[in-house]
Image 1 (cartoon, rainbow, N blue to C red):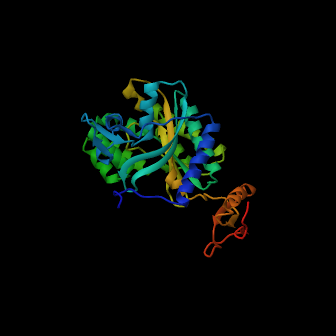
Image 2 (cartoon, rainbow, N blue to C red):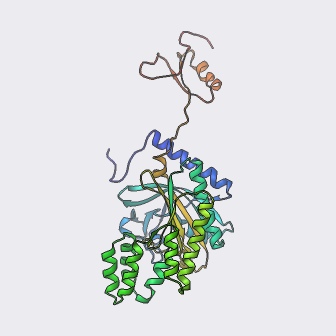
Image 3 (cartoon, rainbow, N blue to C red):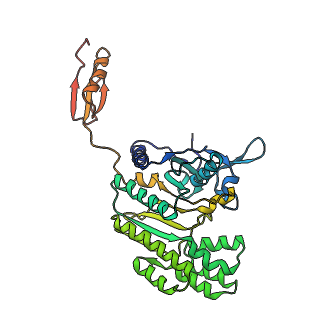
Length: 368
């Protein structure tokens, strides 16, 4: 039988690598005192498509239930966890999750994630802990050739406020900024009659780099307290990351996210060897506004499928073959305990196409 478009079977080393990423992630977050949380794989579509969140319904895997309500496969962990935490209202502040999300994109319909969520915590403390946890996980995975990018939604929000854009107009502008489409950004804002802001936003699309970019815009926005405060905040995060030993940290002041629930600092981790994003996240206090709660919230998700491609899942183990017979199979099985760190096959015939470090012959024995 064939599979639906976007679905795929997985075997062998790919699964081993995913298991290793998940195992190491879980070890790190447990020692950092995060508590596990899991949400149902089936949710109501409204959880993800409501105005606060704004996910595209046509990219969700959905159907109607017996009451005519639209149900979907879990499309985002952060949104589902926010719903769960506000339903159960626990006092714990640090949470972790592992599992699949489902939506239609160029990579298929299912992807593996492992992530953290921190709520009800001082803003800087939460963001530092989130980023430092990411570094801890990458260190444990022995991944050190990466770059961390910082951004902040407050810059975009501040600059577009005078435009009084409709929700659909803001959505188009957000997407154009995220895709770095300078002509589209300029066109949308110019049509609102404010070319000064249009030029400012287009300029921001290229505003990425190191300390020099922060200093340039600190001087440019001198006197605009809200924007200077954001620059100083990003500067503090960048300095802390470098003090911790992260060599490559940059800012992208024109960065936005297509999901509108982000409401402050954003961050992404890039693998230098191929440019893939291995984690992303940020602050999303406004996600909890839909529950009439004023709560600080920050987190990130690791993309397990991306990380599993670049790690070695297997420690080299001795390969042993025990050649047995039906009469000596039990003895062969008991012999496994003598080689706890080896990979062992039991065969009834001498191997012809496998390479083993050691072959033990029990085939001629007749008793245990």
